[in-house]
Image (cartoon, helix red, strand yellow):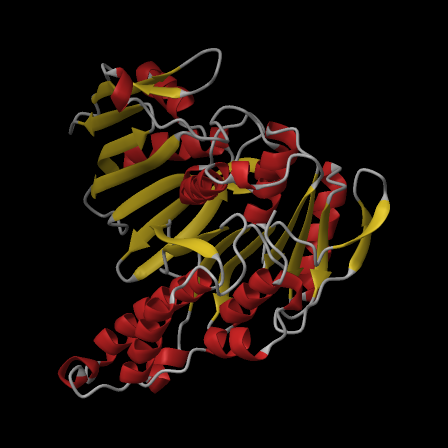
Amino acid sequence: MDKLLTLLEDILNSDLEWVILSQPRSGEKASKVKIRPILIKEDLMFQETVYRGTQVFHTNYLKDEAIERIIRYLQDSFQQAGIRSRLESAAIRVSKKGQITIKRNMTASKDKETGKIIQKNALTHNRVKHYILEEGKPVPFLIRLGVQTKEGMIVRSKYDKFRQINRFLEFIEDVVKELPVDREIRIIDFGCGKSYLTFAMYYFFHELKGREVQIVGLDLKEDVIRHCRSLAEEFGYTGLHFEKGDISSYEGNTYKGGTNSENTNIGDVDMVVSLHACDTATDYALEKAVRWNARVILAVPCCQHEVNGQISNDMLAPFLKYGLIRERMSALITDAVRAELLEEYGYESQILDFIDMEHTPKNILIRAVKRKGMRPGKSYNSKERHTLEKTLECLSIHPTLRQLLKTRSLTKVSKDAT
């Protein structure tokens, strides 16, 4: 019993993935019990899930309580348990006479200085990926948003979010050289939502890169904006602002900011970010980025319904009659057209693989960088433009972004990009 207690004391922490108790004894109504770590108001708890027939019951416990529950289950209800964490795995067997057998297998270790996890017997190139925001190093906004514990460990249920944040920062790090170095960097995040990535951007530029930066996060939900403002104030992020507004009508408000505390118009942006803006909202964000002459554009579109409702082509009719195929083809075509239109207006576009957003499986990121010295519409030659127009005509589609770029005034982008 002492070995079991020691094992549970060691392994029940934020690195735990799960404990599964199974093989119920005669008379036990539950088929299995699963225990995993969760974060509740910054406190590490352990959620017990009990499976009884078609019913599932959840209860949260502190560490000591969870240990006590597991021991009691093994004494009274279940004959085996499997445990897995980021550092080790363990198998527990209980004989009919109550004798406990434990097998532990260490699969990784932690660097004492950095807190990084190193796979056991791994070659250098097989070690755990180096992230821009490192494991084991507490980051205030990650702790507050429930991604990290107070010790800097990643909460297991939030590990995908941690990877997504770092992946996004990698995309930004690749284009930092395109942003100004002689003044503050100005960024607007359309549809910022809970603002995991907005806070990450600010932390990346201001804390890791030591750059002056002004970021505005825009969202339609008043409660979300209020919460984000409160967090920015709590962290002392004076260059991070949140505003309630609609992407299609937003033109940039003046705010108090900048190194000289002067009124600065956010319309003079260097980078426009648009993550999971639904359907044509992405088009409005891209059009504004072009009109504002933004040097960098990052967009993860979703819910591309417009082309799905328009697309028609006799040659493709045998494929388009299948709803799922039509939907996916339309989404891909929508984003390809967006990237191509950005090319036409002076950008070098890439379509990259991103990590699925929390509430949508869309995982395409459009990254566009302004070509230096290129006026809008001048990067495309007449043949390329004609080819794009013929393709749109052939598919019977009329994308919103194309209409916006054609009909709206582009006076703000008539000057060369610096």
